[in-house]
Image (cartoon, rainbow, N blue to C red; front, top):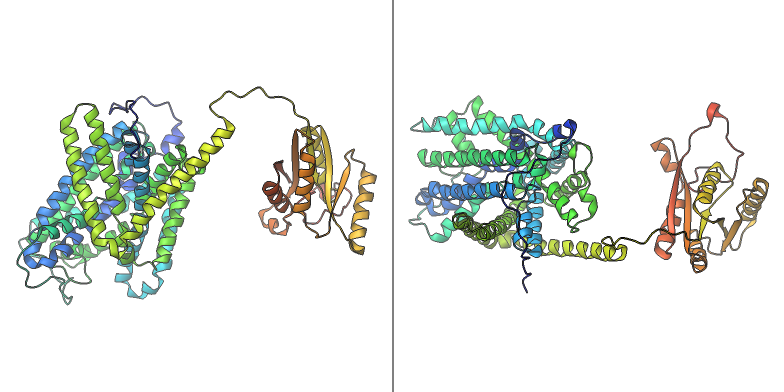
Length: 636
């Protein structure tokens, strides 16, 4: 049964309210409009390198006659691009907290539809990062064939660089990637402008000696072929939604800056796509194996000199860095999902420089696994690509139709309805044509992600029911408590732990686990601890728990359960020594971890791990008498 849509009003596309003043240091780590193009638009910009080629390769099945439809198909994609840009511009205004299609669906189509949109975006962002890196490395290994055997390592290395930059903040990534973006856009525009002033190709050296990919004997173009070409070319639209997803990453006024960035992206992308499509017809380009369409157009417009290699290098670099779009959009989406209890709350945490560190690391790990699993082969990943984004596009457009219909603006609703129809057709065609090539995996992943989101939400709902966060709790009252302190010797760590325990509870007991059948060495150790405890006389009784199997955590857990009924609150305080340097940590034992794990699994006691930094005594003198527990021990 479809989920009913709540009747409450939805946010209107009104001007952004005046934000609370933020420290200048925080604003410095957010994006300007040009920075937003560099940080969030690399995916869309880089699609110029493969979008027109996808159209040409599909139409090549109909021979030269089919290639004549390159410009009309590209024009249809440009119309859809304009619709999407206009729609996402309104999404930015209506949902300034980001989230894109997830936020739209949540407000207008219900929670479950919103989760489908979120799942499609998660899949798309992860695949985009993997495909972008693999495509960039593939272009590099094409220029230097000797590196082909190292492509997995190169992919992981490039991904690590992009991840490291994004861990320093999205504004930092924008500064790093502004120059490559500007060089690529300027190079493609130079190819378009120079090509428009030429009546014939300046050079065809790039395609010389390569086999043609053009079919022979075709005399017509069917509607299905045009739909496939349209769906293939729509891969150039991936990344258009990233700006709407990441509105909180912009400097104030955020809505205005994000809208300007969205419009600038649409204008640049549309001009480049249409310009390259015009050149394809002008130069009567024929696709060949082993050479990209963009390389052939660059050769025809600028010649086979230095300018040709500048364009190719800029393309390689931008393809590799296009993964940055995912790093700008996915962490913000994960934050919204975590805020709505659909993901662990750790994804909502922000570090310094406004970094959603856990979202960045999740994206890096998921993309690395895809790259390693596919062997860095871009052709293995491409069939999975773009399906998720079309699903997200369609849901967003349908949500905006309802948005405008509720406000009586039928013209805008009709525009979004037309966009929804186009993106839905593209989603169906892409899924159908690529299903056996691997698209089935995305069809399986989407419902699994939705189920995961629902499971996390149910877990948080159950926890909230027990904690009753919506109710005012009763006043705090005193409870009689018993504090147990596991000890292993009479040491300074033991003294500090007992001092803390006396402050926490009404009654304190030190406990130690001894062998049930001790040998001579065990008996000497037990007698030594008893003698030391009597000499020290800390005012806390020492309880010995015998275990014939020489376990540590289980007998202590059984002892705690035996005492639980007689006390309102039972606390186990586990003292642990924190070494002064990180390289000394491997020298410690793991008694505290073993005890805590057993208590968490087998008891309802409150378990506290008291970590005490152990610093050398002044002058190197010992602060206390040597005891049995002084060597690299974790617990007292």
